Image 1: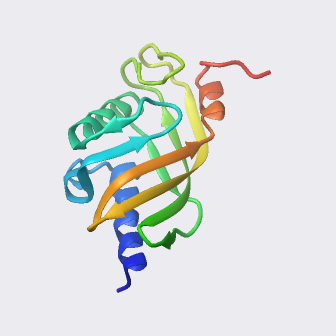
Image 2 (image 1 turned 180 degrees about the vertical axis):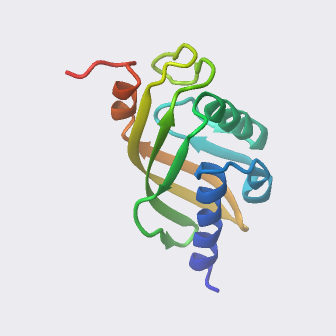
Length: 149
């Protein structure tokens, strides 16, 4: 298997087990480098396996049905894999304070559904960076944290 195909398989597993319907915390130890950077516009950047697991644990506690899935085939070139996705969830859990723009009180029942594109960089079979550009404005509007114009 080529490097591009191997990297796509790693990212495919990451998208399924980290961002998919059922979160598998062990996937972070299996696929992330020890100092992996996870960065999206809605949240503070996260660095390292434990910080990334804590982030996802809090996110899924607040949004128990959180799920993201691919919206197109993955594209790979060298050490990079790019994926388009769609996803979201319903805030039925505890207060969530991780959004850069503000916090949600517990159990608002608000739903978010939005899209994005993610670029992942791999080295020696491990994900070292996940940098995403998401439609955070849509999510924040749906959650009532910003108003529509």
